[in-house]
Length: 293
Image (cartoon, rainbow, N blue to C red):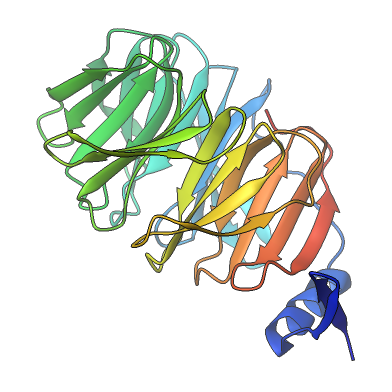
């Protein structure tokens, strides 16, 4: 019988954890797929789970198609004049994705035509981007801590907010009525949407709060920090329910599984931690070839 320890007491692992641990042990090989001529800054799965997009320092985006046990490169997307620092897919249309670049533009792409269908000029060098759950708005943040809200149909700015703190990552909640920002003071700032009125500021970490991700079920969201901790938060109560502490370096990115049962976190120390959300039990602590930055 497999056991885990919590607070010094041994606890039996759930059948789910045991099954996933066995699955990861049986599939230990990793494969590399050439995509870019320079460092990859961002990756994201389409809503249907069939396509993987990547953005790079080489100023391009790439899209791969998932076929059984391999990724097949579908296309390259060129047009940006600077690095593609982040990208994301439309929440319900698997053919559209948007890229944010240091060239002070965002670009919306359609994989059916492989062309840019819109270029939107912004005021600064863009470093983060997200698409609202209802698909109507794109939010983009720049190096000057300005977040611009762009109408996804007209491609025009609807609102703009200048913040007095370092804005790291941004996201809507699943209900589309709140907007979350992680900041350099270790806080999570929550605004009402679309009013953009401050609701709450949560002291989440003692150091820089870097990333945020909502689970697909709408029950939790997670934050990653420079303190090497991942915190899991109850969406309704806005309280921390548990922390994951198996990484040793700043946590740069987070991802929930499609069913919300697993949470992956990656840091600068070449490791990716995969944990069961409800218990915090580790499913895998795997090494990656490159640090995540």
